[in-house]
Length: 334
Image 1: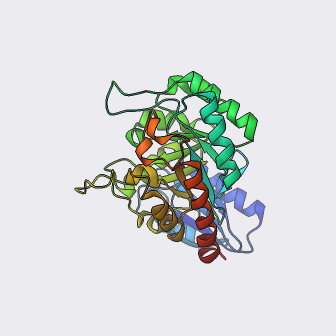
Image 2: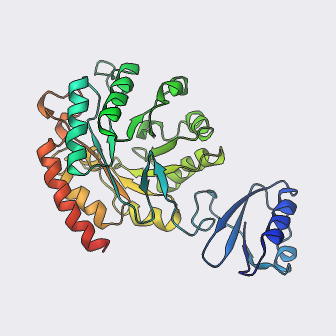
Image 3: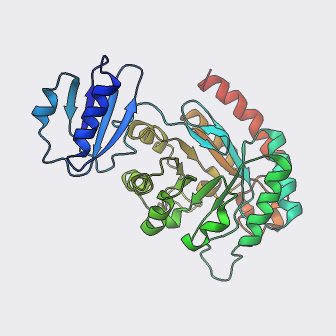
């Protein structure tokens, strides 16, 4: 349920109404706009008398929300949320590029890549320490050592770091990680989502391989329901009957998610296409579609990468992409 307050409502009147509503055993989410304040009621609102609410002097309107996702719903929070990811703003007109290797391999590799992507304009460094792989025989990441190497790259370059978590038991290892990524395979790992909801870390939530946008938003709702509203949505392609690309990049998800939710949306063209030759065009298309950022895999030696070398750009290719990206953004975000 949403209650819109009139523009002349005082803080005292608003707080008095919130206190009364909380006494009705519902959570109240407050969103302040330029003109109106919106109270989003979360929980069992069936027993709340809409006519009584509407009759109050300070209430402009009351309506029920049919969608099951509440906290991430744009109806609850009409203005774009701007997430602070280690000092980098994402959303609400702030565009950020996340770049780095699929997996951390050596100190020289991750620090070298970090320095090159920063010089090209990337704002955050990505790198996998825990790698969910289809085959149990593939490289699974360096785990704690990988996170330590990412921290060293962060100290050397100042870039905030992004890395994927697979198990809540490893959460303490992520103390120096600025953005914790929930991968596609864990999008509906609800115990993991609930645990991350109890942290104050920024969470980058990837869409599952075969999940709908509604399911993605419901997973975001799990995190936000736990109290953590620092969530970034990520479109990384879904599985279809097409086999030429690794996945099918659903760029229509960007405007749809922006219409449904106030959360920032970034796009991962590397995992979506699986081919480095296709990454630049899809990255530019994502920016043109209104994405709040992109996440691109960059490796200094893709042919010998331990993970996903085929979809990784070289530092030179990434630098060229960033030059093109600047021109696209100048057009779509003058």
